[in-house]
Amino acid sequence: MRHLIDITDLSVQEVDELIATAEDIIQDPAKYAEVCRHKKLATLFFEPSTRTRLSFEAAMLDLGGSTLGFSEAQSSSAAKGETVGDTVRVVGGYADIIAMRHPKEGAPLAATQVSTVPVINAGDGGHNHPTQTLTDLLTIHKERGSLSGFTIGCCGDLKFGRTVHSLVNALSRYSGIRFVFISPPELKIPLYLKENTIEPNGLPYAETESLEDAMPDLDILYMTRVQRERFFNEADYLRLRDTYILDPAKLAAAKLDMRILHPLPRVNEITVDVDKDPRAAYFRQAVYGKFIRMALIMKLLEVQP
Ligand code: CP
Image 1 (cartoon, rainbow, N blue to C red):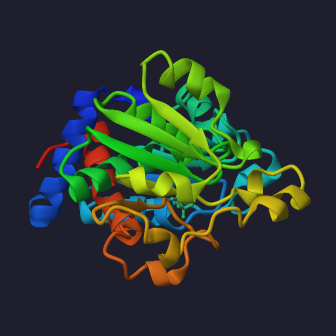
Image 2: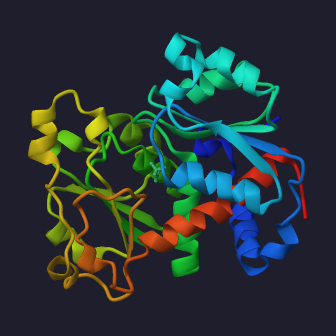
């Protein structure tokens, strides 16, 4: 039985195969419409979500399966003090696969110790978000045709933004990737990622506070929201939340074929008049999320068309 807790639980070959499967689903969805018939996905979301939960549910429905679950801890017996382990042990009797989001780092990993069905980490605190990374990789592959040989700028809350952490771990395994980390000093990329991933792999990277300075070099700009829910005090959040606001004036310095990604939700960091720019890929990215999750569910359930 396989789980997906960290993006590196999948080999590069497996990630590439998932992307190929997702692209085939996009081409021929009817081929996959019944492959999960009589299978059930449980979505255990102890933290809010729109895209991840609903795209998981849409993915299972489009594979012919069905879904059950909860969307907030307060509507589950966690509110009465039940542990994650007991919840997962019980839900494994009702469903064939579990997607779990939890505010505590490591909760989905702990769930794997007792689960009788595959567990997918749908975001754990400020730690990891591997299915967002699969979404990001599919988006880059669809938009650029390759996962190698580009400069990616990660901008915003690089400290608490779990999607960036998983993306760095994933892209570090491809060739010719250069990172530019754009953040205020308080929200820099964690040291552990530099020491454990970036530096041992000899990946070229730069750190800057200036989005304007970085812009002309970028092939991909990965914008992120400042993660209010992870801050210890509101004053720091209010001071930092609008550090970066991407607008058409700033985009004037960007390459014509640059792509703008954002895991969403956005708050204020991309103005709505950027949405009509063909370089804005973030709403297409949200759609790709359903297809890569279809591919992942099939892989973990070991079903084929
Ligand atoms: N990208 C993402 O995780 O969005 P949600 O919080 O809406 O699931």
